[in-house]
Amino acid sequence: MVARVATVAFEGIEARAVDVQVQIAPGNVAFTIVGLPDKAVAESRERVRSALMAAGLALPAKRITVNLAPADLPKEGSHYDLPIALAVMAAIGAVPADALAGYTVLGELALDASVTAVAGVLPAAIAANARGHGLICPAACGPEASWASGDLDILAPRSLVQLANHFKGTQVMARPAPAVTRPGADLSDLRDIKGQESAKRALEIAAAGGHNLLMNGPPGAGKSMLAQRLPSILPPLAPAELLEVSMIQSVAGLLAEGALTDRRPFRAPHHSASMAALVGGGLRARPGEVSLAHHGVLFLDELPEFQPQVLDSLRQPLETGEVLISRANHRVSYPARFQLVAAMNPCRCGRATEPGFACRRSPNERCMAQYQARLSGPLIDRIDLVIEVPAVTAADLILPPPTEGSAEVAQRVARARAVQSARYGALGLAEVTTNARCPVPVLEEVARPDDAGLALIREAADAMRLTARGYHRVLKVARTLADLDGEERVGRLHLAEALSFRTTLERLAVPA
Image (cartoon, rainbow, N blue to C red; front, side):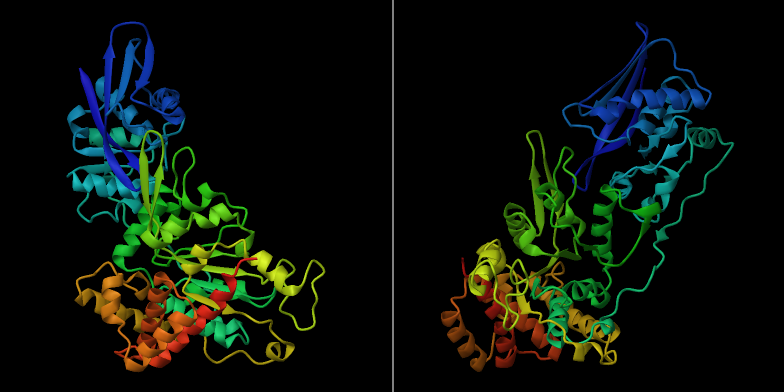
């Protein structure tokens, strides 16, 4: 007799069906797991053996063979413990085999038979619901699984004994309720920043249209403070966006106690981050920072200090909105549609733009050019807004806090985003919610300038040597400026302001 229990294997955020098959046959006493298991899965037999002993069950003195089908699909992770244990229990008659037939199972076992949390429960629950299965998962992950569907049958035991008692009818478990992350401390407010009005304006434009932003200025000018306050003016995640973000966080094991939040991700990796840490990869092809920032913000402070190869790995995700990690035996795709916000100093010493300062290394212009040459032209071309953030003077610091804070700016951002969602929804592009994501054929229709604006951008394109990408990004920013002003048509003033954000970019693109 072969006992079967359904579980899943993860490829990116996709949960593929896996059939756990257990056969107990006469022969030499052995416990073998086959089907391309990794080290964590191979060690499962010891955890299963100890957990069954703690639950009062003894393995028979026979040959136990566990097959994880399909056998050519790599199996990784500790979530195979519980399905293997249940299949063994079904094979020895400790639980009814037919009771497990309609469930997808995942969970890790401790040596005392308790069921501990695992990553990927939300994608597994969605896949189980699509197949018409229920779900058995750890109690700590039950609130996460309940977001998949209100009709999904979920069993979230704390221990193997509790689950066995449920199937016997002596201890019935209730369905877990969805959990939401409690709001913590209030987000940092733009009212905390004195001066830097032009930088605040650029931050509002970037938030309204989802545009990439680069801030260039001396140390202490407030670049990091501005970036950290961007989440306070961004709208909350839409339901579809919340589901995508939560699935990535679930696979990465970042959902605390299974609770979801509608706040947009804000990821700020250190400049020593490797390519695998930033775009994903490693032995198990885990999601990187660009995927963890999906539908949110990726903030790169001290941008030129990152390795040039690491920065250039961002070029493809910035265009396609996804990361494809290829390995010898499989390929994994993660969504990565993020908003890039970066900050940098004008040179290594950071004082090259200070009046009267003379760099000891070389003339100021050469020092700046050598430092900024660490950024490749194609990467800079993918940034919509480049601004200079000057040093804050003492006169600015002694002023009272500004009257306008994040709440007022967030209202304008929300109105502009609502206009964009309605515009692209009417065109049948429900997946496009910001101007930054507008396809080029549609952009030429929705951002067509008036006659004065057309003449301006024609002259500017020749004078500034705009690439095709740069031209389209100017139109996208101009469209956002028009949306903030409540204008149906992109005008000359909108294009002039959008082009002003490219002048600093042109200086950055000059090689050393």
